[in-house]
Image 1 (cartoon, protein in one colour):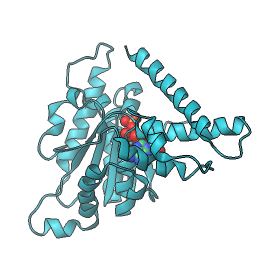
Image 2 (cartoon, helix red, strand yellow):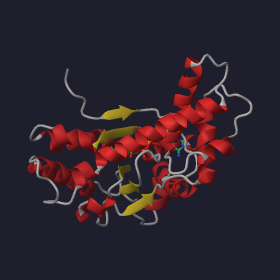
Image 3 (cartoon, rainbow, N blue to C red):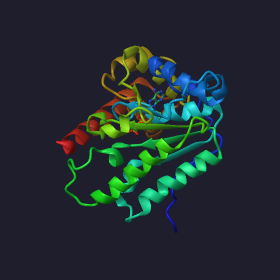
Length: 270
Ligand code: ATP
């Protein structure tokens, strides 16, 4: 079967209430929602709507979730693709895929384009790539820059991109009129982990003596994605143990398991 060029979702159900914590980031992207909903309000005074917003932060902290929530709040279609998909791309396909993506989004504007792992395309030229395929990546990056430079103030398409390696990005991406805004999406602090637990505990049949405060304290350094995993894993462990509801020990076992997984991942990186 033919590989899909990109993913398109007309109706996104995700809204800001699905995104726990991240108050500062939510406030910043609220402006993007407003641009998408009322572009005229801004353009009629001569202002230029930003074209690109970079979401920067560690893996699993909710960057994709936040971009989806922007589309959901603004009630606009969400076009997405992942930079890492381009790594396997045949010569010439990357650039045409980017061209297609922008054409589709413009046809359905206002719209959001989301590019996950933009560093896979947008790494600084001529750095850290010994595996070949460099030209293809550069063609793709150039096409992306061309598309962003090409749309005028009347094109209400905002490109959101995510990375956990802003340091290696080609500076050309961050130039004015491209991704000239960055929003930091950090690992959650204690009070934010409590809020993230609230979101994910809501889906689970809980033992009444479980305390989100306790859970948040057991999980320093966990991302939102890790917390979602803990909740799911705890439910599976409880089911395996034949429990009627998920109890404290199920959670502690799940936390141990997730920490074990994280340690393995870190070892693999080193
Ligand atoms: P990556 O950089 O690995 O792509 P990301 O920052 O885009 O990660 P998401 O894909 O948005 O992270 O998060 C994965 C999942 O983790 C979400 O679908 C959600 O279930 C959960 N999650 C992450 N952050 C939050 C949050 N702030 N509130 C609620 N759930 C969260």
